[in-house]
Image (cartoon, rainbow, N blue to C red; front, side, top):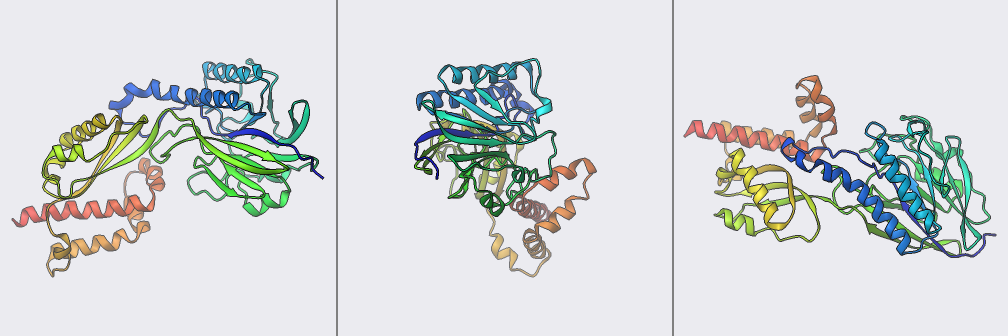
Amino acid sequence: MKRATSFRFIHCADLHLESGFKGLQKRYERWADEMRESTFIAMEKMVELAIKESVDFVVIAGDIFDAETRSIRAEFRFRDAMERLGEHGINCFIVCGNHDPLDSWSKHILLPKNVIRFSTEGESAPAYKDGQKVANVTGISYAETEVIEDLSQRLEPFGDVFDIAVLHCNIGSREHKMYSATTVGELCEKGFDYWALGHVHQRGIIHEDPHIVYPGNTQGRHVNEQGEKGCYLVTVADGKVIDLSFHSLAPFVWETLTVDITDKTSLDQLRASTPPIEQHALSVVKFIGRGPLDNILRSERNAEEMAEEICCSRGSRCVRYLVHTRPDIDLESRRGGNDFLASVLRHADTLAASPDEVRAILKGAPQRFHEWIDEINDEILSEIAQEAAVELFERLLRGEE
């Protein structure tokens, strides 16, 4: 029978220290250093949270670094952060993931004694509170970048106290490579009380009793990693998780800012339509709707300047803009016609409903674009089909006039 003891710990993952941000256009490279620094700030905020909340230990479930960009500076910053935890009596249990496999870590920068880094064979270590063992922490690190084996099958609980398993793995996410792929059923059968997972950058409580949890990454690195990023603070009492609260750590938050031109006749109205924000945001401005301002935004320079002006007025940074507006034309009525223009619109509708067909058409592009095409989600593919049709429609319409 497990001892009835209460304790708290932080669960985080995917710090990706000093990692570059993806999808930034060249004109925004002036922010690159500040944005790389944000990964360190997120880690330091995690340490501050651990100290403020007097947690009993910290768990980090892999990808602390990116092996290809890891620097001596980054390893020292991580070590210094761990030493600060140690000064407050807080141990940290870590595993290595696909971006920081064990053999990629420097052998010349030693981790402090309060850091328990699990081997590639799988092992366990006790976690203490006030000198009493309150949990067993069991984990396994990646030996190399690509690990296909389900590493969860190498981990076994003890059963005397609360059992935590730490693993960098994929449970059914299409957006992340299927490294150490496993299933909820297989994890539940192992007998652990809490699975502290990493690898998937979207946070979520996948299962309760036992808890199977992804905290997400600590700082979003591109537009598909939107919203607040951070860690979970976990409270355990009487052998059960009684509270699991998310804490935001990211200095920058990615967002898609949708700006609708419908019913607006001036750029002043357009700028005033977006409220100010309190948090530092990296905004992808998406112009939508139908109206007379479409003609202005069709100019690349106008669209860029308007997107930056909107972001500046609300306190965010524009990192990209998309123009998905329509001219002040009743496309629905034209779609129902019997002429060639109507058939163009109807064919676009058919394509938009079949993203795989759009992807096949795009594969006619040079080979260097194919990996990018594979990463485009179905919603974007449908938008591409509709955008292409409207562009063709407008050009044909101008010719008709």
